[in-house]
Length: 208
Image (tube, rainbow, N blue to C red):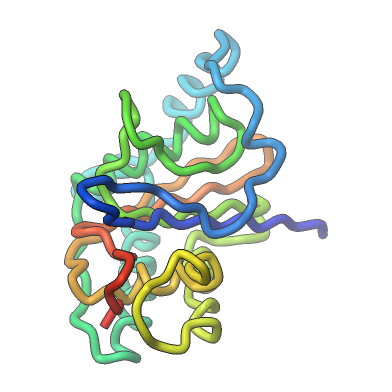
């Protein structure tokens, strides 16, 4: 079976009073298309929301309770390996993540980070994943992000080598306390969005 994985992270870079986002790897060509939602895309999105059949409840997104628990457990397992306190699930962060996951799936057609301003302005730390639906599960996203551990050798976050390990360092950022994730499936792809608060990956600081 053919498969595709895309993974990005949002880095909090403090240069003066400014905050910037930095992608971990190059975007797919697909993510450059479809900047404006067509009527057909809106209909597809409405149909998906109607037929998903998953009540958000206290989760905040369309993840199942089991998926949310598995994502939280996977994050906290990575954090426990370096002696960092576990994260708490945030319904509000999950709702925030679901908004962007739907926008990526039905409008962008790929994955990219929230912009620095405007309606979709980034407010939190963020890790993204996209892979083939039916082949990957939501928890595979955390596995991909954690695999960057081998590229992080300690020391402060630097812009020069951040893309090699930025997803991992967000997972284990000591000051991050809350996590919320979401998923969207469209066009044969599974998209996973996880948001973190407070955000990690501050240049000049160590994750733990």
